[in-house]
Image (cartoon, rainbow, N blue to C red; front, side, top):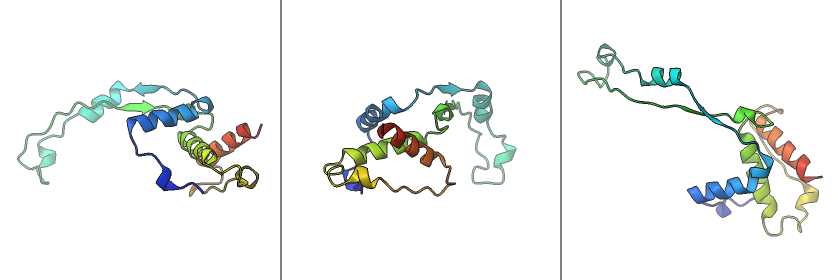
Length: 133
């Protein structure tokens, strides 16, 4: 079983290291923007809409919001879950004694609170099929 105490802290370098570990198993996916949604999100509230709340009497803010969409739906399994599944399994397999202790023969047990055909399961299945070749 993977030991959470061995997990690196969430830092820029740990994210880069995670990417290095999984990059051969994932697709590059673009980041897109949408001007229409940016404009909608940046539309200020009217002064009247603030009257019934804690901001009554305040001048409405004029935010400039840019939304970014990471298109993980373009992964082979159709979701970002493949990244987490690949990273978790590859880190588990790299733990000292995992293979010698029968890890490859015993396999792994996973759980998803979603459907049996969930994106997490699809990601794990895809990686395990690839590694068993």
